[in-house]
Length: 342
Image (cartoon, rainbow, N blue to C red; front, side, top):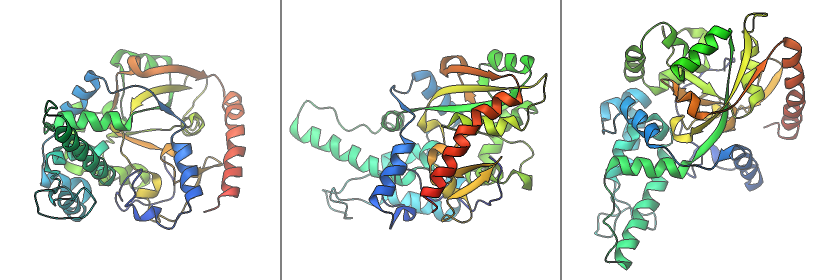
């Protein structure tokens, strides 16, 4: 979503007790945000074909150099230290035999859906490792704690779950047919170059810069954009796409998608904008809450498996239909802003 804001980097992730941006926030407010962000959660686990696609894009290999490119050297070192420092089950740190070792979880940080949630992932990893230890202590037949990065990645993906989110595009009938033929929603960069070039851009430019370029697209930092957005509120997606509608040939197609949360970056707009205290921003006469993950989910590479994931398709035939669809949401968001100005 283009708006007048500048990203300075990824600051933690969702559901993170250690996130400084949650400190001092009233429990009622935290509950409000968590409730809204959970509205679109759907049941279901990650499919093997989804797992295979993700690991094909970024194998689970611990690469400190790539982490530094993705998140800056300073943040990369924080991430590595967090998983290599022994941790006591109580949360303290110790080198004794009772300490938990989380190094086996490090390779999972290669995937942006984990790396951008690294603090949340560490909290989960500690509990996951502790649970495995307890099971072994109480049941001699229990299998040893898994150290395979793929199994750890799968477990965390299923812990995060799936979400119903929306993509809207202004397309001709022929362009929509291309989406169905490719069985994928691709970023604008893929309309000009192949997938190998897009993969290289993600690898060479890094997650931080790509999110910066997406949030502040007017800077033109990337020749080929390798990113896309999903929005949990369908009105958000339609509002953005309506700016590209050209009747009578290009109409807005609203696609309801069921995707694994781990496929998206774990960032809220708040986590990447220059002023993390700025809650509200306006686009196309509608107010949006930067403190909610549902406002915008950032995807990289493409959104594959369209036919398997699209659960509903709506086509808007004219501008009046779009305005009628957006008006109630515009009023709702104005009310929310009035009730929670900051």
